[in-house]
Image (tube, rainbow, N blue to C red):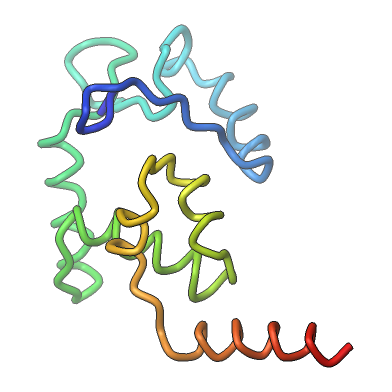
Length: 131
């Protein structure tokens, strides 16, 4: 998708861990000259990005292969925001910045915070208060 649901274009920065992959990608003949980060090599048009239907089909196929049921929406919006909070320890403001949400309430909706993340947040606060 080229724009947000409000129609605004968003430039998404890439983490430094992707640099080796990007260097490799730039050398691939099927990717050369494409303005898109993720190019569908099976597209009928050269250097064309994935369309929603192609991503959806891939998502369903791989979910079935993994034996899980998860919609594309849940798997991208909810689980990635939740993972940033619960596994990587991001706070909601960091997730808002990383996901380019304008409204923090959207982040609260997407990030399902588990009990251990809440406990870790309390532990951090208590340690700071005791020092």
